[in-house]
Length: 209
Image (tube, rainbow, N blue to C red; front, top):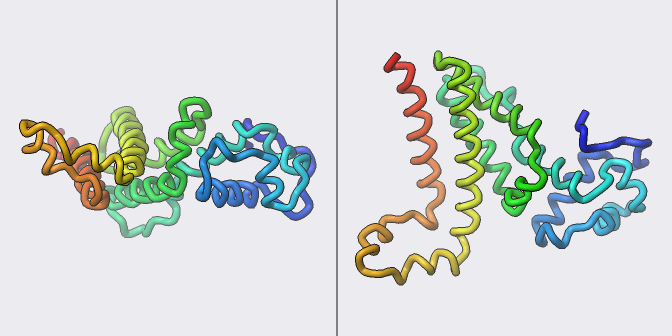
């Protein structure tokens, strides 16, 4: 059971999952700073007291949202997938989920869902272990891949804004030879390249043993 959540009784028509889904819906429309438990209770047509039975504070709600955001479902992958394909599919799944609420990423500094992160690292490490990479090394690679994916999603969100992309258009001449090759809008291309390099590099470690 999530240590951050205290269940006392149960709302008559609302589950924890429905509360989290409603919070996601609200956060897709407004900033995280504007979200309150009272507002969420109103969205669900509940009394604030009923909501507090699941989440005693906004911080607990944010932590639970973060846990859902990075949790992976490795059981949904086809059994025929190779280790490299499983790792790629899990990373794609993680990126898609994080991009549903990118504004939540900065909150990890104060509401780090440590338990969920370790589970996610274990899920990412398993296909690496299946490549015959030593367990400790595989876990470190998985940790790096998790950080890489979270960081990429944060970059992807911020660089999509017109005012951010525009900063790279008017640079000194000596930097333009570099800036003209930057990928600021085609995130799919950049993501595929970054992910492919990482997975091939990990797979190549086994070949070099």
